[in-house]
Image (cartoon, rainbow, N blue to C red):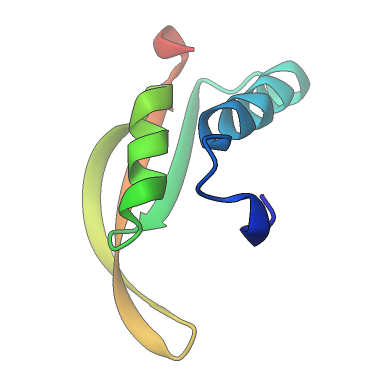
Length: 78
């Protein structure tokens, strides 16, 4: 989503549209994503969609090392 559009309540529909496309094109058993733990708004959206937290891990990115949360959404939830 374009940064100018964040924070306006479009996150859930945006994620759901991406999941719908991926389901129709690839029909996966599980969706998995990783999100920086400081990104609380994104985590909230993913939880609203049905993603469940799995584990945290450290990842080097953008010149630093940050904690990330792996989240999954199983077929039974979408």
